[in-house]
Image 1 (cartoon, rainbow, N blue to C red):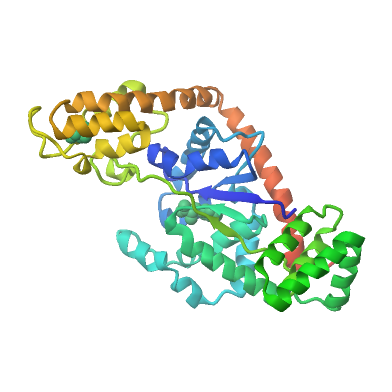
Image 2: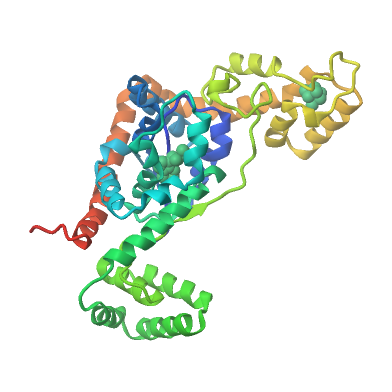
Length: 400
Ligand code: TRP
Ligand code: SF4
């Protein structure tokens, strides 16, 4: 249960473009080779800022899932689901809210920043303040330990870790914990039990971080252990209490900045995006008319790639010899801008062809997507419910 589990979500805000692909989705696709992955449509999160536009949520959610499938998210390996169809997320948000100081939420940097940058919307709502708290519930409910996110989300993950620590501290109390933990050590079996004790001592007495890591791996691999025993042993190891909600880690991967057609960051709202499932002729037209170095007015004027968004796309799409050719050609006026753009056009179209192909069956038959998501939601609910049973019990909500 504690084997590495990846979870991430995206708000349904419109068709996905190549900025989303290179900034996040491509990484999601790769992670499937190594981990059990859960990817979800954060529709409640979309409503924290777009509560006045409910009509767009569901449509954009389905389109986004088709974009994911087209990009290579594999429904046989990964669990794809919709947040609001797993109501346990709401329950955990509510329960975590009981122990979350309002000041923690107000201090998250994105809170004030976003309120300012989205000044056209009234974001003095309870829901918006609770955004990172809900994000915490999304993650902790699956006991996910790896969360691929962008730089902008690192402060949220920090908060989520604090929430987990606080939760375990408050509710990991259990009558007879020490005895139960020692019994659980016994159940590890002779050699592993001895090793666990050694490592625990090394960590608690010398702060040996390697010993801690090894002990965690040992517990993760001890598949004969019941979930509750494993939680106890994780807690016992670090000298805390039962770890009901393990702390997740942000998975930061170096991702390129994708310039939009006008040189600003690519964004649907700037109207400067190339969409993942865009018609090839339209992609070609967009790149051909894309902005270049403003100093290169005529073909004979040399240019500076650093001032050209096309150069930004070459960074992503071209190999070193092609980039060398661009640099040379541009700075000496040896090549024209249209010539320079052609390798980018070719590369984008090459990248998108398999995406369009993979997406087509889902476009043709929307029921296929519905079915994949229904199955994903079912799986997600089962996992979420397991955690909620422990959480309710720990918080004194047991009525059997
Ligand atoms: N806040 C994330 C974003 O805007 C979306 C999100 C919601 C998320 N819940 C999450 C990401 C849980 C990772 C894990 O991009
Ligand atoms: Fe930009 Fe290429 Fe034109 Fe130089 S030659 S300005 S890099 S499009």
